Image 1: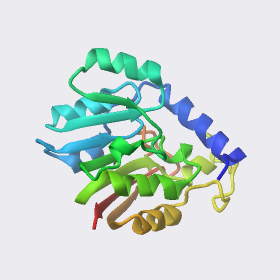
Image 2 (image 1 turned 135 degrees about the vertical axis):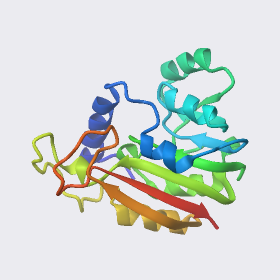
Image 3 (image 1 turned 180 degrees about the vertical axis):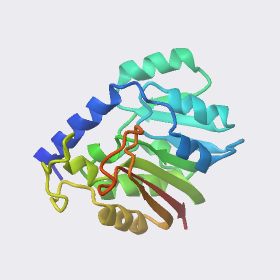
Length: 208
């Protein structure tokens, strides 16, 4: 699938949000993950690495990926014990698709970049071991269809939008069992939307 105008608008919005410096783990994610001692964790879209470092502080053995080589170089200098790899979350390299991770964490900004949700889900299904876990915490796709004044600028049912239904179906096809899906009025950076519009969501799934 080729990138659509909707994908590009969502991609630009995600990058605008990433400019606010909030790259650490959201509190709800830290609470949900809990103790990660000795768990092998794949962190998608790691950015400048603060969130990956927090995963390591919670006991995880972390592999972190991002497409931005400059950010990865800076992260390598700060946290040399973490493995930093330049990779696309929807096209994981073969060395990451060996069913060796206990947990995959997909944070804010991943879904807004996807052009092929099935490839993304299949890659994660290949990366995580059987009974391994997946945690997705991202901007709600509805929130990406409205601007700062809550005016609709995109159709939620456009083919370029990764709707929650499409996401769940892709994960099920990739071998995951979705065990929890929660929606929140805050977006993934902690800003509040109109309470009538979901701002973020958290999805927890297990590889069967």
